[in-house]
Structures are given as structure tokens and as C-alpha cells.
Image 1 (cartoon, helix red, strand yellow):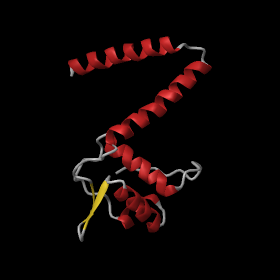
Image 2: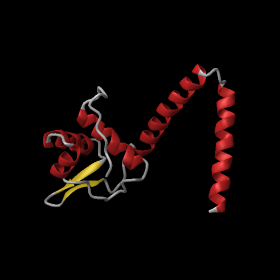
Image 3: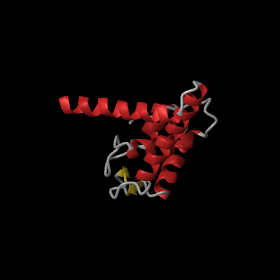
Length: 131
């Protein structure tokens, strides 16, 4: 599980962990039923206090995204994240907002951006058919 912590983000570390785990689940990189790293292991990987990871896991459990199983660890909820689709849309919304802001700065119209997106989709679909 790849999580990257930024000390300059301004967002508390436990929320960075929560957001990134949500993203990994929403994107399918973490599957329902998959075991999460133990708190101490993840804390060592991220070089953070284990209490920070424990807090993130509690937040995820409260949201129904992960579930604790006595004596066997923490797992991605087998029912899947109730927020999976909402989270994917939130992530895409942020990216679209950034794209539109950048296009505005470059004096590119929304219509041109939409045409570019459609064009790129056609290229991706053609490439997928070739594979």
C-alpha cells in the first residue's frame, strides 16, 4: 500500500492517511476484504507515530470503510466502501476544477477542453482495442 505524507500539506497526517486510503479503495487498488497493514508497520513505513495511524484507522472504521477483525487485523470492508462512488466523483471533481482553472489561465475555453477530453478518450479507447 503506497501512501505519501506531506509535512507541508497543511492537512493533519491522519487525514492524509484517511484520504489516501479512501482513494486507494475508490480506485480499486485496495479490494474489499484485503488486509490493511498493521498499525505499527504502516507507522514505521510513514515514519509517523503509531497513534496517528490508529486514529486514521478509527476514522476509516467509523465511516464503514474498513473493519477490525478480532485478533486478525484490519480489513477493507467486505461490503465495499459506502463512499466509493462518491469518493471517486469527489476526486474527479477536484481534478476537473484544477483543469478548468488551468485552462482559464491559458485562455482556453471550456468547449475546447471538452473537445480535448473527447479526443483523448477516443485515443484511449482505440489503444485499448489494440491491446
